[in-house]
Length: 304
Image (cartoon, rainbow, N blue to C red; front, side):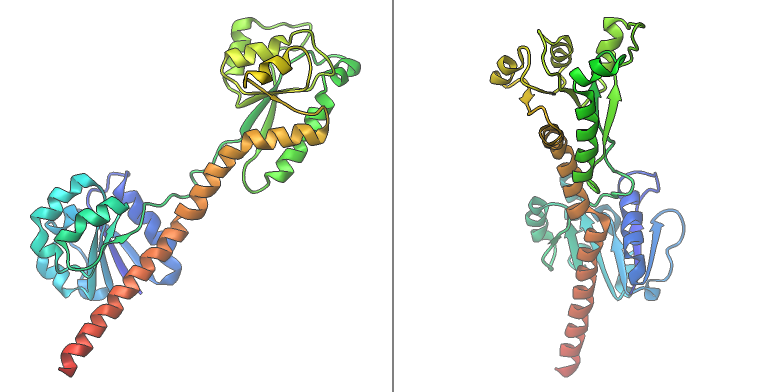
């Protein structure tokens, strides 16, 4: 199939980018070209099976006789602001063979201006470009002496971090980072506060604590905390301020995954349902239905 994607201004934003992403996603299916309406003379409409205008604004910018020469043509209703342009071009819009609306409300609003049923196809996103940064998990404490680190559960945190990444493989990466202090070099509270603010969560796995400074500091910075049952952690957990976990690799890994899961779910949902590959499939169906419908109407006319 040969499709010409026409957009308005080639300004590196919005509609122009969407047209290019869609054309790239469709490339394996045929010849898909993109061109700005005002950049140069459009190639002959007869060279394409489909002319796809990426905004209702373009209905009045592309000559009517050009669109009549296309095998099928259609346009997109990209926002409620573009409805004014659609209303002004209703006569021409009624000759379109397909109409794509970006949300269900726009489908309903566009119906009165076209003869075909508008099809709801949302915008897409390029997961290979818009992918999540790593989930940043922090640990704070003195790092000198193996006995001290074991008491603080650093070995458990490292092992659990590796396990959590296995469970989230292909969805999200968890990055484990340590505070900027390196005993006996001590950093200021201001520097620690800046570090806390870079985190998505803080992990505490101590065997025991009096009243964990790092827990309170992280919470004060708005950072979620997962903690063992030590110090005042049960009191804080009772107020819904942190998550208690077992002092084990399994307990820690489960807590890490639970905290990171919302970010992974958001990224995965966008990629799975709004990736350009999925949007391209929906558009391809619309094109083929429009071509089949026009062919059917021609056959019916010839038969009569």
